[in-house]
Amino acid sequence: MVTIVVNGERRDVQSSADTPLLYVLRNELNVMTPKFGCGLAQCGACSILLDGEEVRACITPVDMAVGKEVTTVDGLAARWAKQRKLTPEAAAKTLHPVQEAWVDEQVPQCGICQFGMMIKVTELLEHNPRPSDADIKEALTNSGPSPHLCRCASYAAILEGVHRAAQIMAGGDVG
Image (cartoon, rainbow, N blue to C red; front, top):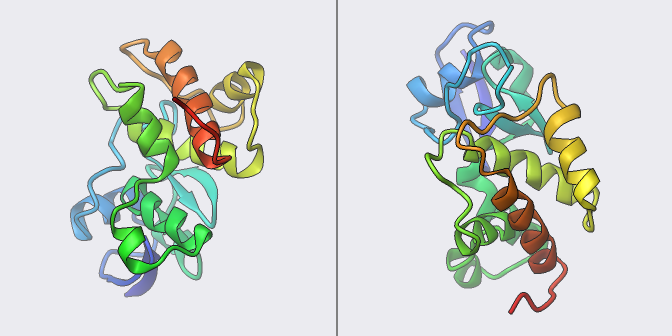
């Protein structure tokens, strides 16, 4: 048994150390936002943050998460609230800016890839708060083991969502 921290909560895991983190999250801990896409780290649907860096949970063994913070889309709002030092009352009413932008821009179509996209975009904006279109395209296509794939081709909406999230994170008016 290992203990990992998922979305700020310590969780005991019964699965063997080499079990893919995606299976542990979904099947054992009932954290359903990381999706099973290809199972080969080639689509990005399973992406999570591990100590703030995007990893593909379908190929990451659970023992790689020991001693690190696992963040899924479920934990983004709390991550943002912690970074902003919001009161518990304010935190309870808060979405992460990426989540807010995804809703505002109506980015998702079928939704299978969107949780992975939101994780990657969160990582991007934490490292580069004012990305250009080229920076966004680079992050979503060349910075991981493979590009993040959207079979619905909602790439234009994703681009708008990233810019809107950056504005929200900067405290700017998004009117």
